[in-house]
Image (cartoon, rainbow, N blue to C red; front, side, top):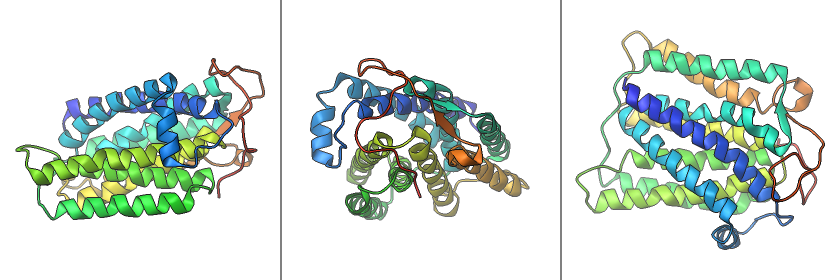
Length: 296
């Protein structure tokens, strides 16, 4: 296992976790739900706050890419899952706070990451096979179609679709290496395509529901899918005899993230506080627009 890759993954998780809270504040300043992708992009590029979030995500993505190149995908993605405990700590800025049982879920996520780190083997090679290109872009088309069909659904569905988008981005990164040829360029272009759609879907989920309701299913999707693809198709290794520990670590890290998104009646997850705030200050405030709704 590469410790540099693990540190890069955790650094990216820190930026992603803080960026999620800033993104939630940014999208909730507008009463209009950003249901159109082109309109959302046109508004975002003129908004300094949103551009700041994008800058944080880009810095996090660079660190995440380093982790993907140096670590098996299951460990790189599990390290990224640590962004959700970071988000859980920072959500007080948007009027939500972690309950006592939610802290136990954070411990579960951390324990899962420790198991994955202990059992991880060598990362598989960078994929440069031209056959990888149409598969990656087919995923972009399918994601875009699902996004258009599901953009008016709840935060749980939107978070899940966003997670699939970020999963596709992570898988595409494994096809981006040297020497640079047409196949590498084509796969590299799929990375922002996945990311833009995922960012939009996540923003839709954050606009009218709790941060946890959209974030936890996103974390689960972007962790499980690349992990399975990495082990089954991309040659990611596991230390001899550590297969069960790695499987348990993956289950713990994703289950802990899902636990944090459980409805408030279960005693887990995040709870909003009622307080006033202004659009220029990311403090506690009631969200504009549609009334909050629970994800399925």
